[in-house]
View (cartoon, rainbow, N blue to C red):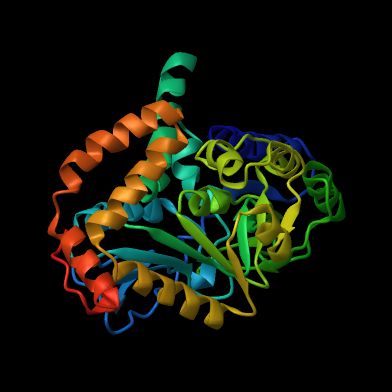
Length: 390
């Protein structure tokens, strides 16, 4: 993400130098980056919204007893992660961690795709003029931003309740488009096609043909704009799902570690978690170095997801059914299992055995053990057993 910040600033500077250095008689030019939050449309709030969970970028519902459904809820922006999202995700999962009634969580995306990832343009106000008088101070400022964004996904991993990611469409570490408005002024004030030399300069800078349209800004006096899109300025979808415990996807899903295409190394979890998730360093390197798409069947074969479903609806039903099954078990047992699985991932076998011994010397004294064994001996389903909240 830090490199993405620098890349965004360099892009702005490069465009500004190229365009202001060009000579277009009778035309005045300025450059403005527009974030997706500038004209964001509000989504409707569904009935059954979970208590104490009211957000702009997320929708949290009580899907069924002991199960919460967290939706990335900016469908008109393909669930791109804006500044509000980073704050709300931490708040949301901190609340879920403390929610004694919640035992499992499903994360999905509203609309046509899971997420387009981070919205770099929405961050422009924070990153184009970083705080600090010199390189050291600017670096400290940027490091603080990076670590705060890392916390957005760390909080999912640390949540003691199992988290199931249900992915459809794209799950991208880069790859959507960001809008740029180029403002111009002509003597008559009428909107006009972008001058060919100007379009050529933009195409040269971007390495591709620029698609454009001209329109006068509301209330303009002689000013108009050309708008065009730049692909590849969103990041971090894969960072989110690798922080989850279980991953399901629909057949139309694809996964992409696309950061190298925008000149940066992923720094919010993908490079750290993906190798441990799929256990194939060669494949991780290939995906990270090339930014190619991993389609659903390959994701299943590599172990990134555990099941693939024909469409979003079937996948969500399966994810919620899995969450319900997990929530029927002893919360002491399930949450203890998650804690120890995470500890074992990052420690030796000997250290992990010592840790679980210390853990279970207290957890074995739970009444959940007696209730579970009794249900098993009586051939009862665990969902008929009442476990205390945790």
